Every structure is written in C-alpha cells, then in structure tokens.
Image (cartoon, rainbow, N blue to C red; front, side, top):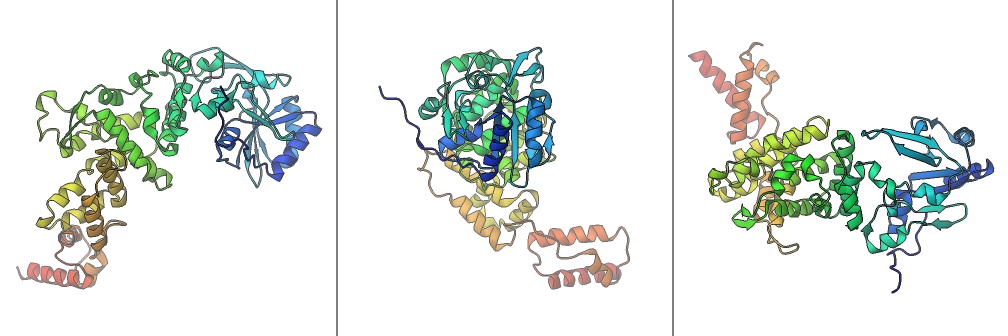
Length: 472
C-alpha cells in the first residue's frame, strides 16, 4: 500500500532573510536552529503564517543563546524558566527555545519540573510535543524536514494522534484535540481518545480553556466536527449547560423533530460560513450559535407544549444558562450579556416578517437599540439554514425582507439616535432641570413609533407640547 500523500507535497517554507540571519548567528555560536510546531504544520498544509516563528535551538545553553540573539533586538525572558525566550524585532516576534526535560509534579498546569538539555536529540525533544502533526521540524539552514514521529503521514491521513507517553501530563491537550479536529478536519485516533478520557480537566485555568474554545469557533470551517468529539473525549461533565443539551433526545424544534445537540452543531457550522473576520463580532456570533438552545433544558418537561417550547420561549429561557456558561470561561467584559441579548432576539426577524402587515417599523427601530442588526441576521440565517441539509435551504425570505426594511428605516448599520436633544429644548425657552428628561424620552418614543422623522417635525411637536403645557 502506497504511503498517503500530503495535499502540499512540496511545501513552501517561506524563510525570511531575518530568520536566515538569526539562524546563521545561532549556528556561528555552535547551535543548530530548527523551526518547529504550528508554523511547520501550516506550511505542510499549504497556508503558512510567515510571522509566527517557533525556533528550537540545539547545542547551546540558555546563556549562549541569549548572547547570540542579543544583536537582533530585545529578548524577553518571561519563559526562561521553561527554556523559552521571546525575541522581538521590527519584522516579527519569535519564540526561541532550547530542548527541555519535563516531569509532572502536581495537578495544576504549571506543576512541572523543567530542566534544559541542549544536548537532547531532535527525536527526543519532538516526543514531548502534543500531536504528531506538531512534532515535525524544519532544519532551515539545511533545508531539511525532520519527521521522526511520522507527523506528515498523519497530516495526509487527517488523523490526530498523540506523539508519546508524555501526552497525558497536560489535560489541556484534551480540549486541543477537540479544537484541532474541527480546525483541520481531522479524526482523532482511538488510542488518543482513550488517553483523553482519563484526564482531569478540573484544575485547568479558565483562560486556557477559553483559548481552545475560541480557536475552535473562530478558526474552524466545520466547528461541529470538534464539538461532536466532546462526548467521546469525556469533556461534557465540565460544561453542565452544554451537557444538559447533549443529553436531550429528539424534540420539536421550529416545527420539526430534531436532536437539539445536532441542530446546534448544524447552526454553528452555518454561522462559521458567515464570519466576517472581525474577532469580537465573530466571537459573539459563534457563541450565540452554540448556545442558542441552552434554554431548552431549562424549560419544565411537563410544560413543553407548542407555546412553551416555541422559539421565543426558548430564547428567553437561554439567558441565564448562557451568562452562567460564559462567565465561568471568560473575563471579556460584556460578552456574556451580548451573546444572551443576541439569542433573546433571535426569533424576532421571523416573527416580524410573519406580522409585517401590522406596521413592524416601530419594533424594528427598537430592536436596533438592543442588538446589532447585521449580526442578528447572520445568526437568524444560520438557524434558518440549519433546518435543512447543506446547500438545500430555501431563500431566507424573512431575513431578506427584514434587512431591506431596516435599511429603508436607516437603522440597519446602527441604532437610531434621538432627533430632539436637550439643547433644542433650551433654545425653545425651557429651563434646565428635571423636566427635560421625560420630555426628551417622550419625543424619542414618538420618533421610534414614526410620529416624526425630521428635526423640524420634532421641533414642531416640542413647541406644541410646551404651548399646551403652559396653557394648562
């Protein structure tokens, strides 16, 4: 049987002149520099990140390496205890390390005894890396690929396989397996799944968990592939809101019978096709797609009739579990509330479309005050498409109508601002004081209702209102 082939058998390793100069300086000092990790993997996959260099240096002590790097710019020694330096230049930042031996001495992620060993072989150093696809090296001065653990073969097979027995020493690798499965469209080797299932994730810092979930949602074309491995990897018990959804059997969703977890995964995949590349906005969209049915397990099983489990009721019930779930994972200010708000109004575009004969404009204007409408429509479109097989979804008539109406009202790109302001009332002779606020609020509500659309109309209303008040 022929060996599997990579889609990019002649990889482009874009070595910059600066990388070459750094390598030559290391070589002159007696070291051997080798590019390692994600940079090599991504080059082999055909999409290199030219400014994400990770260089491992063999044959030099930390002091010798520091001396060799000094002419190139500031060298940060934050990771020096772990044998890692960060070199910052005008062109790029480099993680530069020496081989090290590690042994687990506790349950926390930093509980390792680390000893640098410049004389270690590349094969032994690569064995401490998590997956074989990350254990490949490129000795760039020699233009030679080093692959002692057959990572290129696993890349070609799209199999995620742990490199060696040290894999189980860091439980974060369980979540990384899930992330890589989705990000690189890979299956996880059964023996790797077996090790993952035995890991205890309870001592992982929230920020490390968050980073893996963030990458899964933002960097995967099919995040569902990673999410689908959660049960096999024994991840669900650490995320009770997610586990509750995964435990539910088939139920009615939007008039059809479906498994909530599978429907969610389909929604997440559709949302991934609508990402804009704007980091925070995409994060809100993707977490909303993932959590939008978290309200379903919250509903009383004895009261799951058509009304009680309709889209609006489920969206309303989702707020508490969404905030609880995200608040444990991230300190990003406002994100839990932003995701919950987006999910709360997820059914609104279709509800307004169904009632469009009854003047929906005031509701659209008010909706624009609560959420960013383009983002809401992306989520609604993802949910609409999730009801159907990929590529088979009918035209999203509600979304197209809603977008057109919001643009016509001038609120698609952002919320409406009040036409009438305090300075206008002062110019009309009203004295500063507590009376301004209620009058301005009344004017703004009338504006949202469509009673007036220009400042002149708002001023006419204000004059009439003030005159009536004085006359009384």
